[in-house]
Image (cartoon, rainbow over all chains, first blue to last red; front, side, top):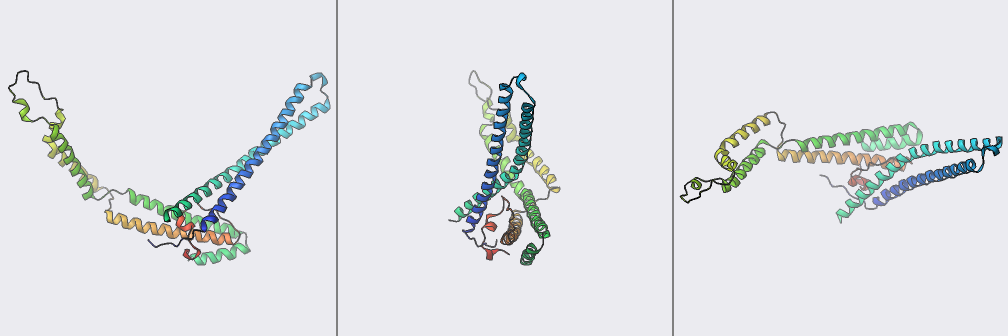
Length: 112
Length: 179
């Protein structure tokens, strides 16, 4: 088999790609977490409004507020679902570039 | 050929959006080719050994079985003792059968093996190694071509994902080592 000249510095290039992929995946994870926290806060607010206000006290403004929060929660749920779906290929890319980096590092180690 | 592709890819990337599609197709073709070659290699690795090798394995196996059986097979001497309270031999009858019928068993299995090999696509070990070496070289050449196109695309600002299972020799090769 013909020999291939190896440039050990190429590992740094692959490492940078891995870092970028990991960063993107992690950033997306943070984004999902932040949306989930917003949703939790709204759900708690909705719960509080329902518990604190007896039916006798509920007026149009109250009902409007409840509807608005419910709509916000539904929108957030949809957004979380879309962002989670978008995260999957990012996670796969990060795993793939991590695997490639590890294999390249192992190969270089074997050359020593 | 790869140099020509690289040149084309570089100029296309800077001028048209369809270059992205061209690039993806080019890389996908190479990846399909690599997968095909790896499949061929798997097939070569799975092909049965030469008949002579299988026959020798069979001979050795029968010889080993007979050798072990001889150690425990009941011998005629076991039946001649005049001692009071003689007891029948305790060793299994099957060992005696193996010793007695070894030649027939071997012949029968050899016949079965010969029949089996009439329909088998076997390969001699030297040929297998030569085929594998040839395929390994072709796979490496294809991987180097793939890496070359990826680097050209990267240089043109069009990053392409490498495969997790790409050959480290291609991924870590110097630019000069690429086609």
